Amino acid sequence: MIYDRPVWQLMADAADDIRPPYTADAIDAWFRENFPKIKPGTVAAHIRGLTANDLSRHHYPGLAAKDPLFFRTASGELVRFDAATHSSQTPRPGATRRPRKTALRSSPAYLDPRVTTGIQALSQTRAFDHTKLFQLMAELDDNVARGNAYAAHALLRAILDHIPPMLGCTSFTAVANNYPWTRTDKGLRAQATRLQAPS
Image 1 (cartoon, rainbow, N blue to C red):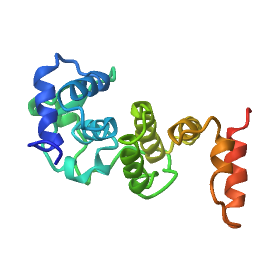
Image 2: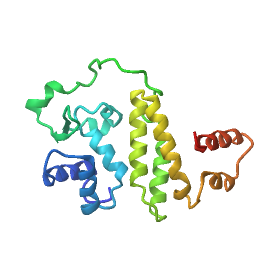
Image 3: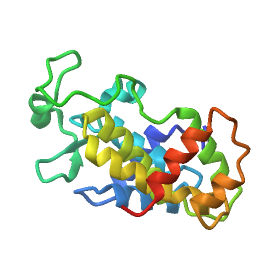
């Protein structure tokens, strides 16, 4: 723990301090003001894991095992979870889910957690605002889990745009030229460069 309590407990303090309905931006701003060492990606993950009817909640079993804190309304806003009102509208663990598109991947997360950890470490050493990048990464995982191929592709391209400035380069080509590519990686380099080319 970075602070004296885990993030999921701090999230309850945020819910007490912020006037509902809640938004992810308002919760993130609360953490930036009160607990600035908590990364935006961590905040976003806890919001999903503590929202009773979030379809991605099962990807965060440690949080999903706790009592939910939020409930997402039909309009997309977050309100405080009320067991008497919301329990009947919340999918039960193991319950049959409504049919949805086949996920692009069967693993819990599309992005390797080591990549996220590496970027979080990098964010502490470089003067680059990673807030938007972490949000894009969280949304990429969510859209892949839902099987939203087109949205996932657009998010992946947006994430790639963050790589050059994050590494102190002016373009993706500059990043690629400064990387010691192996023979096996040359095809991946060409593919990534094509993704960056104007469509």
